[in-house]
Structure formats: C-alpha cells, structure tokens
Image (cartoon, rainbow, N blue to C red; front, top):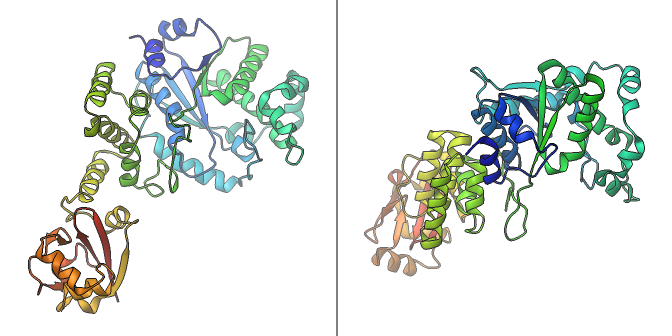
Amino acid sequence: MDLFAELSWRGLVNQMTHPELPERMAAGPMVLYCGFDPTADSLHIGSMLPIMTIAHLQRAGHRPLVLVGGGTGLIGDPSFKKDERSLLTKEKAAENTEGIRKQLSHFLDFEGENAARMVDNLDWLGTLPLLDFLRDIGKHFSVNAMLARDSVRMRLEDRDQGISYTEFTYTLLQAYDYLHLCREYDCRLQIGGSDQWGNIVAGMDLSRRLLSKETFGLTIPLVTKSDGTKFGKSESGNVWLDPQRTSPYKFYQFWINQADADTPMYLKYFTFLTRDEIESLERRLIEEPHKREAQRRLAEEVTRLTHGEAALQNAIKASQAMFGGDLRGLDEATLLDVFSEVPSSELPRSVLPGERLIADVLTECGVFESKGEAKRMIKNGGLYVSGERIETEDAKLTMAACLTEGIAVVRKGKKNYHLLRFVG
C-alpha cells in the first residue's frame, strides 16, 4: 500500500482539507507538524494516535516537527472543553515540556536525513509584541466566524462558565504557529485530532494570506471503545507514557485486558505490524478467543515501543507471576506494583529468624481464619510462600521465604494472594 492507503486502512484519517493531499504526500517529502500541550510532565495514551501517525509519515520519508506548546500551554485550548483549564506557570510548562521530549524519542527518530525536530512555541510567542500581533495577525480573524465555531458556541451557551478572552485568543496563537513553521521550515501539513479542525483551517488561511503558500490539514479520529466508555483510562485513572506514573507492568496489563471487539482496531492504531500480521491475529481471535493471542501481541508491541525490550520482559515475567510463575528476580518496586491490589500485612522483622510456624503467622495475619484451616491447606498442597510450596505443618518462617529483604508473597489455592511486608 502507498502511504495514504496505509493510513486509511489503519483508520488514522478523519478529515483532510484537500482531496489532492494523498497525491501531494506521494510526490515527495513534506515537512509536517503536530502540537502537544504540556499540561502534564507526561503524555498519556490518548496522545499515542497522533504520535503513531507522525511516525508512519516519518517512516515514509516525511520530516516531522513536533511542537510542544510551551507558549499556548500557558493559555489552554478551549476546544470542546467544558471548563477553563488551570493556567500553567512558565516554570511548570518548561518542566513538563522536558518530560515530553524524552517520551517522544521512543517513537520518532531525531537523527538522520529526515530527522524529527522538536520546537517550543514559547520561543516565538514569548517575544511577540502585543500591538504588532493585534495589528498584523488579529485583523485577519473575524470575531463573527470565531463565535460561530461549535467549540466556542458550546462554552458561550454555558451561562455559568462562558469563555474568557484568554481562551478566545487561542485560535489566533495556534494559527500563528502554523504561519511561523511554514515561514521558517516550509512546513506544509498540520496534523491534529478531530477537535482541531477549526484551528488547523485558521492557520492555513493565515499562511495563505501572509505567505501566499498552500498548506494542508489532516485530522485523526478520536479513539473510542466498543462499549462506549472512554479510551485511555484504567480504574486508577489516566494511563501515562511515563513509567514513573504508570509502571510498565500496569501499562502492559492495560493493553492485554482489552476487549475482543476493540483489539483488531487497536493493533492497527498502535502498532507497526503489517496488514497480513494483523489480519492473521484477527482470524485467530475469532477462532480461538480464549487464547487472547491478539491481546498479548498488542500488549507486547505497544509496551516494547513505549518502554523498551527490558521493561517488556519484566512486565511479562511479572504478569506470569500472578499465575503461579517464578517470583524470584522481580525487584521490590515491581513486586509492590504487581501485588498492589491484594490484601497485605506488616510484620516485625523479628519473626524471620525461624522460631514461628508459618501456619501460626498466617493465621494471625488473617490469611487463614484458623490454624486448622492453615494446616488443611498445607496438607492438600495448596499453600505457597514466595513461589515455594509449603510441604509440612511444622514449616517455619525464615529469611528464605523473602523475595527481597522485606517482602514475601503468600498464595493459597490458585489465585488468592496475600503480601507480607517485614519492617523494623
């Protein structure tokens, strides 16, 4: 497939401003840009669709400009937002921008002939004289047209919230970004989510008026789930690309737990697997859904892309540990992450020299309701401490039971876990 056919097959095309855009893409390399607001020090998986689209374009020979909105992030895009965003300080915007830089390097190549380049619009918006901007840029925008936009009208109809003048100017600033990048880098294509259509068109119009250059726009669909719930959130909140915010283990688990109905589309959206590979996985998903092979491949591909091979293998090992796999070799942070939602108890480290029976200690912790229940579980071969089966009723708790200096994991039966933490 050619590039545009590939993007279309993957579901990455929502709207385009010119029907001849596919031919223009095929004619030769273009400079394109996509913007990301630094509202946090990490992007979340809701940003992955535009990132993957840019990556496909770069792989086809086009040159991406990744714009981080250090300037516009101080204002906040009001598009289809119910409430005004909290304004960032310049210091916080700069801190968040640096975090985003690191994450994008996992997806894009910042070296080579068509190397991606990161730009911060604070560099040009931060020194823009107000009077010059109002005179030279503002005169090209009709307030009537801006008021007619759905994203603005929605806020105007809210009598309690409304829209501030600060937010109202956002379109002008984003349009100026396109003008600046077109002038400085000959950027001719802007990519954004479907909610960015109005802002993209405004930038194209400004570039045509002031530079007499033809520019293009392409929007990407918003990701949806088959059950109608919001994509990109787990029970604990946003799924972040930063491993300090969402661990590779939990990131992997998010993807492996996707519904059968959503997985084929997510394979197209979020991986570089070929059409043949994805269609093969889709067939096996239909024929043998219980094996969840498509979900495993999705989780592996996205986790590897986002966090690297070592983090992926650790996440896989941690996942296997929940089903009776080898727990040893997992570090303390991973163990706490894996077993963060199981019952836990804190015990004094003084119980570890081996003077207390395991059955007694676990009964006191509430793992068993009685010593008799504990002994029956041991007799039936169903009690494991840190992956090792407890064979005798007189087994004692020692340092050998610990996976790390301060952690042991108890499993009774196949799936009932309890975390022991030794303190003091």
